[in-house]
Amino acid sequence: MSESSEAVDQAGQAPCDHCGIFTIPGPLGVQSAWRDITYQPVRNNIWTASEGIYRTIYVEGRSGVIAFDTFSTPGGARAYQGAIQRCFPRKPVHTLVYSHEHLDHTGYASDLAPDADILAHDLCNRVIEARQSDGQLPATEVWTDERREFSIDGVNFELLYPGPTHGDGNLAAYFPASKVLFMVDTVIPGVGYTFFPDWHLAPYVGVMRRLLGLDWDLFVPGHFWMIDRQGFIDSLDFYDRMADAAQQAIIDGLDSDDYDAVTRYVAEKLAPAYQHLFRFDEYFAMNLIRYMQHYLTGGWGFEGNLAAGTTPFSG
Image 1 (tube, one colour):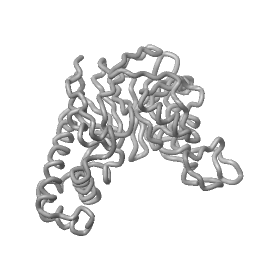
Image 2 (tube, rainbow, N blue to C red; image 1 turned 45 degrees about the horizontal axis):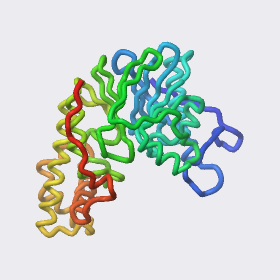
Image 3 (cartoon, rainbow, N blue to C red; image 1 turned 180 degrees about the vertical axis):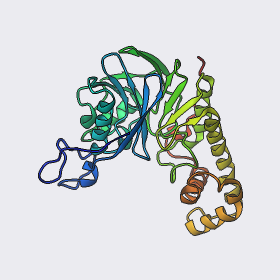
Image 4 (cartoon, helix red, strand yellow; image 1 turned 120 degrees about the vertical axis):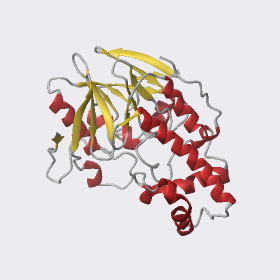
């Protein structure tokens, strides 16, 4: 199923376009471009939407829809809204949940549902308020705990902040009745994305394993396809092995600034164990460089060095 039409003005610019933090004046075609969105049911009243790379969820309530995130551009947000309305033509998006503060996931509430109530963790919303990006609306309801239960329009779910993972205030959404867990930019199929931008590597694995204390068997990531519980565990094990591989590479004298040398090292030393993984050829060398830099520099910023809690969530 897909949604792929949109009204534009005579200049080819979509109405109510927003520019994020771009400073170049004039129409931004890449921001306005329509995204073809596919959508499908997950379980019970939970649906998932994707344009092939990004993925999110939305949930049908009694009178309206709870949507998570906004996709990566104004055009993507409008296409997402169109997909939701194709599923539920008489039910508006009345609630929007931000996974974290990055514009490529939550930057365009103004285009998706400008009048919706917006939920976000306080750490996420602080960045949004400071950034003042065009199109990214601040939250209307902020929470500060590690976990908070919500019952909205007949939909019961829990939001959890397990600790520093990626970005600021990155949360997981847990649907106990459906045994579904949703979280963005953490566990994804295959190797990590490029050089792990804005990733807090030191606490990451321990923090993410807290979510294994919950009763779920289907994980919906923020990119690519859904995976089961074992796939989630396998992904976290990969990051542990990557940390060991990066330290060994440094011991072996590999120069992390020499991309050609890193690529050769990966092909010779690590391909036999990892080349079966999705996106190995594209990103594994960059993954290794980022982990090497973590050990060479000590990590990025306060959250990247925080001794976060690792006690499993229960329930």
